[in-house]
Image (cartoon, rainbow, N blue to C red; front, side):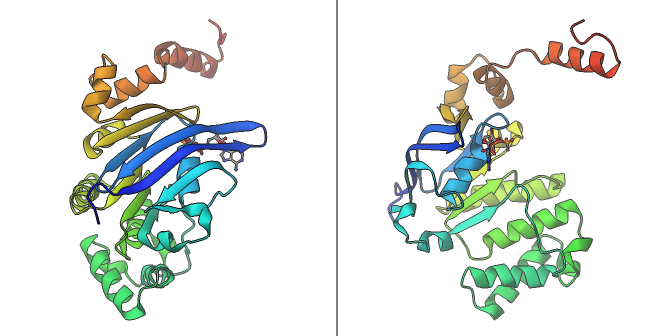
Length: 265
Ligand SMILES: Nc1ncnc2c1ncn2[C@@H]1O[C@H](COP(=O)(O)OP(=O)(O)OP(=O)(O)O)[C@@H](O)[C@H]1O
């Protein structure tokens, strides 16, 4: 595999829901080993882009290639090389963690015994060894999130889509995931990381793509984005590039409404 292999290529991708255009011609090329921080305001179109790449939305316009294959070609073998941590997942609450992980491992074509062994080892590393055979319904939010992360990794994918993967995780677990992603990228895995936690995106990504209203408005390393802006932090750059300057007056109005005063006042 060439080190500059294009893992992802989006050509002029547009998506419309009814009369509402939510993606406005996204162009993106991602090379092997990159960690892309995919950021943007609520409703900008991030999840829609990810769902298109996962093959969950098919009525887009434009072209999407993953590992060099057009995903509309009908060849779905690319999916075996992908891992996905959704922002919100319906975990099968009545299953135990082991049952869930073996089930998803087998979906990805893993041998049952191999999936069991790997699941057990990974659960232990995430300090969940004692609840391996407990029902997921008894798990805390962070514990469920760890199970999702493990299930995304079980088949050793080459491309990972992480949507707000650290939600609910404590500071120690966050540090492990951050380090693990950096090490995976160093080995040539590609990571598409979508989050609203700007200081983590700033630290973790070697390339940041900002989308606003379904279009890419900035694309580069954190240092390159800093050159576009007078702001020092990614959250400052985000505020500036999305044209957001009225947080003080907005909060004043909200509090005024809460207090029952004149909303304009
Ligand atoms: N199934 C759907 N039907 C109609 N509109 C939709 C659908 N899914 C998403 N949208 C709209 O598409 C736009 C983009 O949504 P999307 O979920 O991609 O945004 P996002 O950038 O992931 O937002 P967030 O940061 O809040 O998760 C939003 O205006 C949303 O209301």
